[in-house]
Length: 304
Image (cartoon, rainbow, N blue to C red; front, side):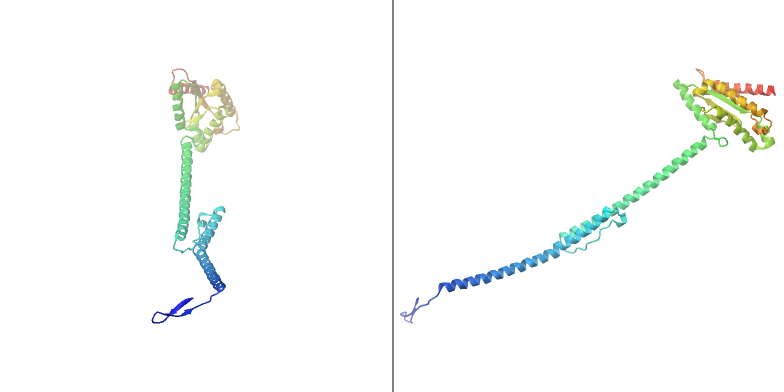
């Protein structure tokens, strides 16, 4: 209720109103419900928009990156070749940290692939070098063998004998030398070469080597000249050297008496041998064996 005044300020009437409180509460409730529904709808739309934004800007790119990573992992598990160890670019263009991460991962995979290629190239190069070194070693080994081998008989040559002599000189200095030297010199080689040719002369030389090798199994034999051989007698054969030489002479006598053999098959050789004694060097033992060989050669000529 409220009074109403005239222009003079005097009250002339009363303004009364009757408002039902229930209606006010009802209207307020309707407004509140409407506002709530609007707020809920707005929030739902906002969440939907945010979800769509997250899906497009975050979840989607991450799934692309995850797929590319799984494919690369599968290639690694299958032990694919280096050329196949690539990671497909997920083509993420979000302009944020996810794009930067994707770019970094793809770049890292490329770096790993390049590094693996370099390692394989280096390994291949190392293998090639090792093969070359091995081939060179084999070549040097073969050359070394050929350098010390007599091509006609396959036994040691003069260079091999000189190498063995150097070792014996060290053994003498060390006080552990025990050896003997056999000198062998073929008779009539020049006659065989002149009358039947050098091929038959070579067979004559080979025949002598076979006779010596059959008896001296443990001692190295060297051909130091056209018709000269040296045997460095050692080990158990040293104590039965004379017996072995006598056995060779018996075989030679049998060939000389066999009329069915060709001249180059009848072996005639002079032998002489000497054993190392305290105070000797190899040259001294060689000289004594050589002198004994010439004595044997003179005896053989005297018999003829």
